[in-house]
Length: 304
Image 1 (tube, rainbow, N blue to C red):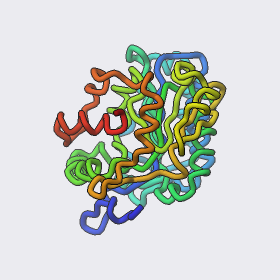
Image 2 (spheres, one colour):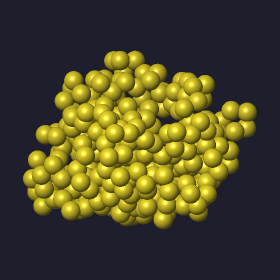
Image 3 (cartoon, rainbow, N blue to C red):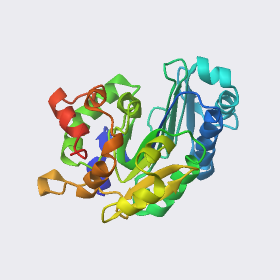
Image 4 (spheres, rainbow, N blue to C red):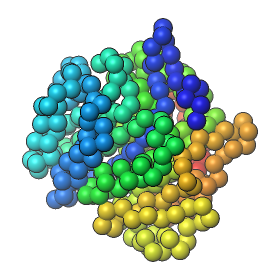
């Protein structure tokens, strides 16, 4: 990947940068949700804890300097089922030089227990060079998601920016939407909005597509997916009953201007067609800065 092509600079500072994202969605309140969330955060901190500079929870007005107490709050939430069920909670951390300059590695955990059903949206943003080390990405995903009662998720190239700053968010979207339309392997960096579709099925596939136990079972399980996977796609175990579908050796970005549409991602889309979110659910995903027609086609670019 040409990192400079996917980096937005403003007055000598980066507003948006490319990354490799790991995104996971879980819904409802199974007994093991707390343990799954704790393992996701622990796996991230084991890999990147010494690089974290700032953190913020939902009750903070701004980022604070990372310290030994940064994960105490989240780990308390994860151990308290009542809190997970009744509170809107969030934890963010990143490695930027400035509090408002979000840089990878970064993590964002958005926990909405009061929603019906409860919604848990998790995103790790790994340094973009991890795309050149795919086995490391897979190992981290398998470790982080091992206990999560996963619904679905995905991993591949994406963008990272401070969407809580409305001015930055507007600038980034004006710049990034044309990139998304040109480079089909580039994901939408707003996992929260993607969760609107994921509530009803698989809302996106990419280099890695994560299937929770129910989705995997609906497709016949790991053995059946190993047999039916098209050329270049492999099925890997995830946790006790989930599956990772791997589309090629490493993530691809594509380029529709060069007719590079990443057909292997479309092959995964066909493989999981039975559990893809229905049209009315995909239509609930609002992509800021993209027309309704363009968003309709973009969300279905690998679901043919």
